[in-house]
Image (cartoon, rainbow, N blue to C red; front, side, top):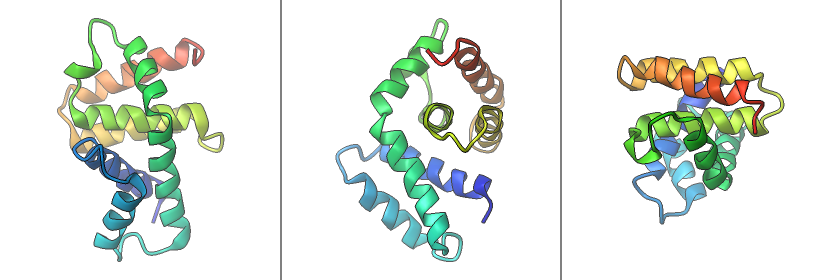
Length: 138
């Protein structure tokens, strides 16, 4: 499995968590990975996915504040749950995943938007993340 594929699984779990906020996040991730045993078979793949999901959720309040600060004329409540999950994951990587270049995180977010969101979302997500990146990660 490529990192892009693993990231996509992490995104799917983050999306699901938004509908089940009171449930144990580790357990939700583990259940998800059991549903796709052929796709998420290797321990290093599972570890990467879990790290992305739990890392994002550990910092979700801070990430949401930073996302909202990069929105111009928008609020988090107006974002689709798909776009919010994509933005949270990408911003988590930009802020905390030192082994992932910022440009890779932004590109991967745009690719997820192409696959899972509306046509206009890719430009929107790219713009929000570019705003954040150009602001010096404040």
